[in-house]
Length: 129
Image (cartoon, rainbow, N blue to C red; front, side, top):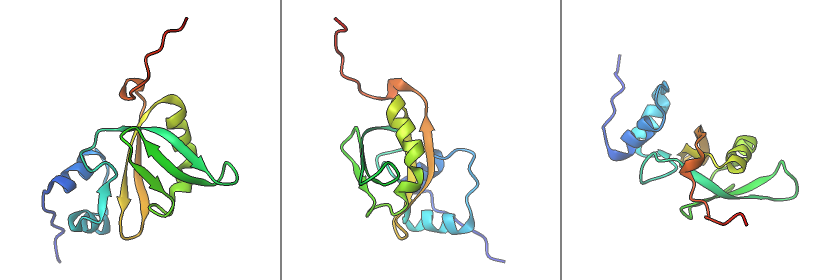
């Protein structure tokens, strides 16, 4: 029986570190090792805040996510982006940080993590006068 092997590249480490406690399937490990299942934030597993969500015709038609670092994902980048719309909207509403993985071959989002910590987001400092 063949064993699953994985090479500890920075991308592999980011995916695994960004999903502590998750059991990966052999297919996922293979995709991670090939570099086709990656963390959405290529610089590491630091959560990012959503600054903009774009819907098409109704609230069940999420088309785009924009993050505080300027990264944009559309439904042509991630075909199942709309499956996560309620969780992403909650994260955006409450200033929570998010991370997730993207299967670049299948163009699908997996492993969404929401970090309920408002201090992650860069907020404008305004006087409440």
